[in-house]
Image (cartoon, rainbow, N blue to C red; front, top):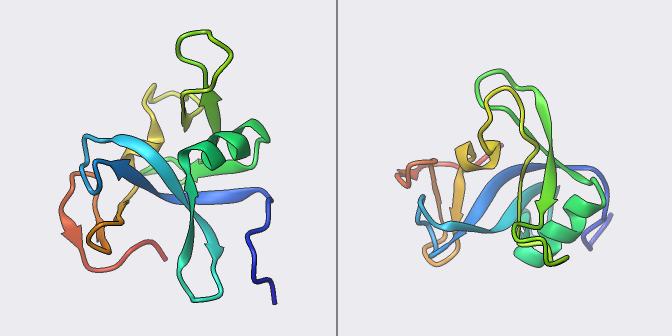
Length: 123
C-alpha cells in the first residue's frame, strides 16, 4: 500500500480557493484523485500544482461532456515565473477548473462551483 503521494498522471477533481471556499477566489491548490492513507484526497498546493502541470501530470474533465483536458501552468507576465494553472483552452475557451467543486479547507466542507455547500465531494 502506498502511503505517500505518487507523481503520476492524475485527474483533478476539485479546486481550493483563496479566500477559502470563495467561488470567486483565486485557485490556490488542486484536489487530485489519489487517496491518502486516511481515506481523504490529496491537495496539491499552488506551487505543487504548477510543478505537476509543467510535468504534464494533471488533467480534468470538461463539464457536460466528460472529455479530458490537460492542465497547464501559465506565466502571465512573461517573467519566467509561473503564476497559476488552468485547463488548456478548448472549444469552450474557458478554464474548466473553475467549474469543478471547491474544497473549503477552513470549514471542511465541499462547495459547488457557485460556492453553495454540497453534501458530498467528488467520488
